[in-house]
Image (cartoon, rainbow, N blue to C red; front, side, top):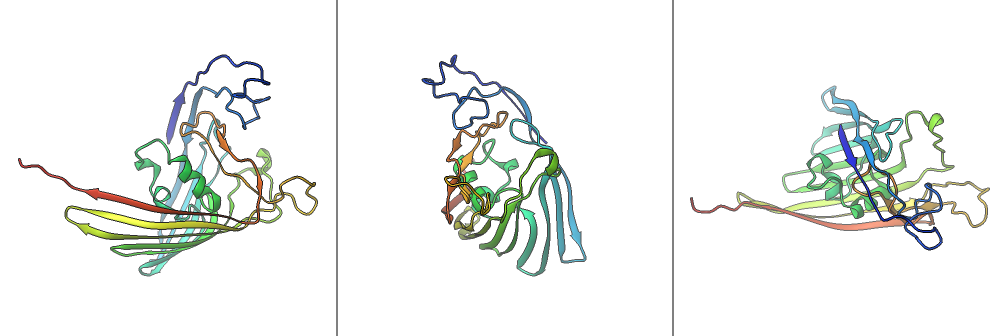
Length: 262
């Protein structure tokens, strides 16, 4: 459980026609309107994980927290994994596929409150939290590799009550990551890697009857502020009609020990 409290302030807004800090309505998130102060549960999760029949693992995790207002509840993770072919593992279900160093690490151990906005935007294109997919991954003392096929984001537990719509066709994406540790000794270590994602088929949001001028295959790059008491998307491209989309990134991390005469 993670709990946030915040108080936002800004100068008194002027007319909408000249003060572009605010939208025409509170629903107009294309502008930085007066952000809501208050509290929220950033994360409120409950679940169970374990092993069964020797080489099988499972995880079932529900999330009831949210940004700005607590969610009705959704599946955060729900997967099974076979680990009988060491050093490889095979996972299927709902989970965040491995894409990048920031994605791989838990936010519980993060230096800051959340991941960097650019990392969150990149990981959410074909990966991100509660993404349905299948992943094969493996690791050794000096290497790590993962490849995933992903689909849609998992809907909320009670979709009828919250009005979640089902697309005509779900998104199809590919995610990959390769990392190495070229230096590892008693004084420290160095890790380098490369990762990327590719959306081969964006979700069909409208079907064949989509009105002209409306994005039928929209891809939106957007992100909230790291403190999410208000859920306004301060960064958002809006729906971009696209055939494909991709990301690529490099990563590096080091840990070195220093000592002084004592």
